Image (cartoon, rainbow, N blue to C red):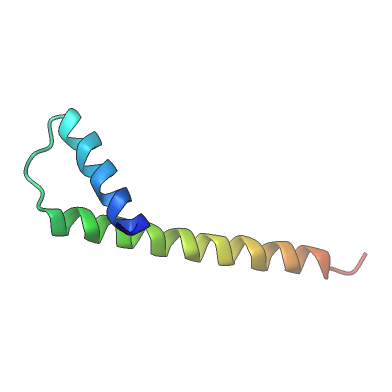
Length: 58
């Protein structure tokens, strides 16, 4: 089982504990895919900001 599949299962379990039962397995997979992509973008943005901060003239 892939990490994304495990994350989708965890998300499904947590939402079901909170009363959400209307999503399909593919919905959970799509949500995880979007979260992973957003985390990648955030990581790149933070790294770029860090590099820009190191290269600022003093």
